[in-house]
Length: 288
Ligand code: GUN
Image (cartoon, rainbow, N blue to C red; front, side):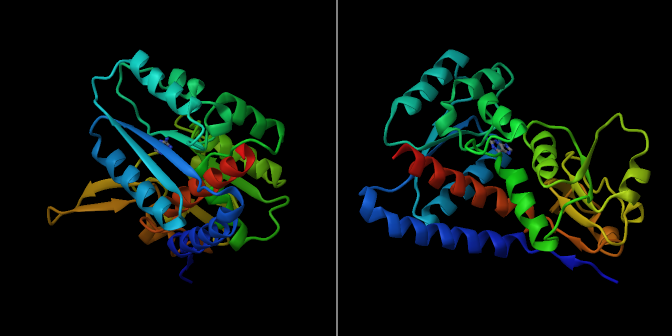
């Protein structure tokens, strides 16, 4: 049987509408709107697209977007100064520095410089530490937070489920493991050195894949009752010379071998932005 397609785009639109209505109802009380500052360094085409989507969706939610475009050649020190200006600006509630940064800049140093109470990406070690300790007042990284929302729509009781996460990044794999562990899943993290990936996939009730390898996970590996969440966004060339976006899961084969699956595009991507806006509203409320 063909799998249910999890409509992340529709769910994200629902969340953005809810946020917009919440923001309009609190605007009178605070006499201002939440604001989100996004720093884009350089000309990475994918980053430009992501940043422009964040800007557009922020406007839809009635969040004030502030975009700061900086040259690829900016020094680490100058970027730290920009972050510090935003930390000290009371009109900025959320700060996001779009990754990746140019090679000459130490990403972790920049992340560490963001005030944790404005770190709506949830990448600061204070926020990741809170997530891993089960302390609820930190910011949760947007992509895994969005994935969990979609998983919960498909499966209301996650307790005891076998969750397999493929990829161990700080942005997706590691925080996803903490979130699923908090839902009482039995969590396995697989990565590039894992030797029995197909066997792990066949036993998993939930698979979250974020490895950046187009069509990597094959349908034949999957458990027929599984929920598949594809975090990958890969641009590939097709035989007719065109470009196409695909995930890390081979969607065509996977949809014949699982219970539910997120498409690419239209799955996790829009949820990441919706959760960023949700974190920004939370930042605004806690700062006011
Ligand atoms: N680059 C890819 N995904 C993300 C994200 O969620 N946040 C930031 N800041 N950069 C990214």
